[in-house]
Length: 99
Image 1 (cartoon, one colour):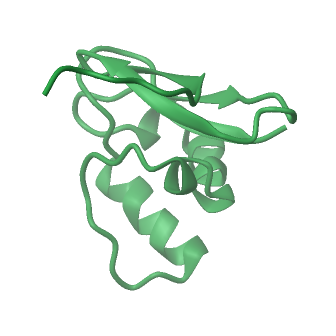
Image 2 (cartoon, helix red, strand yellow):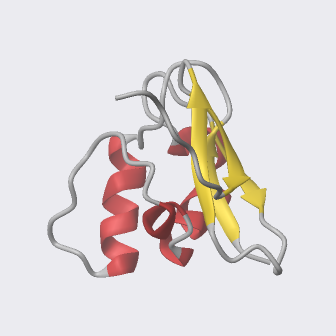
C-alpha cells in the first residue's frame, strides 16, 4: 500500500529545517527546493515517509502538521488536493473548466 505525506491542518505543506536535512541525508540529494510541492512522486518518496514517521510532529514546518495517507494498491494514478492548505489524496480523474 503506497504511503503519501500530506498536510493535515490548514496552512500548507512544508518541512521543518531538521526534517529537510534528514531527508537530504537519506535520499543522498544535495539540492532540494524547499517549499510547497504537491508532486505525488515526491510525497510518496520512501525517504520522505521515513522522515515523517521518525520525526512525527517535528517534521512539519511552521504552519504544517504532516501525516501519512495510505493509498490502496489498486489506485495507480492519484493526486494531492487541498483546501486552504489542508490536504488529502484523491484518485486522479479528468476535469474541465471554461476558457
